[in-house]
Length: 385
Ligand SMILES: *Cc1c(COP(=O)(O)O)cnc(C)c1O
Image 1 (cartoon, rainbow, N blue to C red):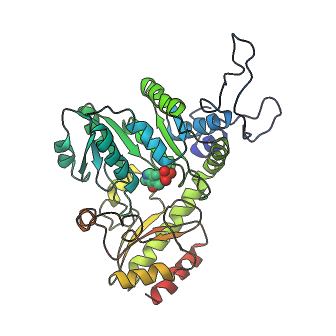
Image 2 (cartoon, rainbow, N blue to C red; image 1 turned 135 degrees about the vertical axis):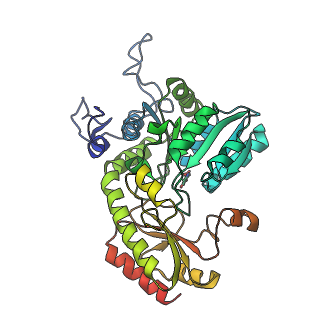
Image 3 (cartoon, protein in one colour; image 1 turned 120 degrees about the vertical axis):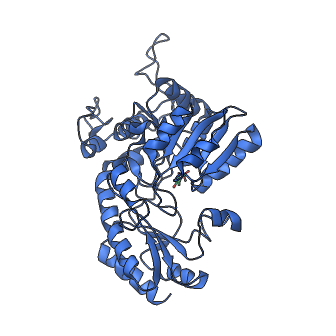
């Protein structure tokens, strides 16, 4: 598919030609384990066995590769399986430099790598480039980044950090789950790997679990292909099909998410019961200008601090009716989360302090319902908090 076509067009067409046998315009779910060999000298149609390759998965992979501006993309059974594939390229004794505000599951995975393979990680504040630079060791093999961060929505300078990683001879991986390829393509800044939890915005409807790795380098792509086909954490044909269907509407969903998110952020910022709001699209966000320069929009995640403490925050979270109290993000429905008690409950007080996880902080995944209904819902919940 021509890369000169625009994002919206590629999302609907890349990797998805009509079926040559039937003319079906939607890629079928190839629920088959094996494929017939034409003879002992030739496999039929390039497929042999569904762990190794599946046409539905391939269509979704080609589509995502096109959206990320990547030469290759690989779909996995979850975002964590995708991350495991990248970390699986490390060897015992390697060292990782990782953004401090990283997704919690990544911290758990890095703990496992340390325990079983002696791979150590240094967590750094990526807003301080000198701190990142100082963390590099001769054996640093991978710099792991995420922007905007969870749950604070901080934005880091991905272009400079990719260059820094390269200067030190390390691979750079960017978890692009929050931004999505609609808002930024880190490979274009020199990242070696882009990783997604497709469970979130790519799927977009909170009805699947999936992950992806996108990349350009052919040798690294072979290594990730091994991780997928040999380690075997593949995405099923049905979920590949759901991912493909989700990606078709990624652009219009992201536009709707961020249109609602800015309205919600502005409403909360002016509300007397809210102390502070963090949303990259607000002019008082600490990296608003960087976000404006780096991203093609500001996304659908909003972080807010309720006036008061745990009691008030708890009442707010439990008082919303449309915003459902749930972890995860990126679906069409709005969710509210309380990181202190939900996503970040496993951290010690000190770790929470370091990561600025406050007692009065809530995270909103703003959906695409009518914005007036969302604002009325937050307003009524704040009346009770
Ligand atoms: C959810 C998430 C993951 C993990 O993805 P799963 O699909 O749940 O395995 C990784 N990174 C980020 C930023 C996430 O939000």
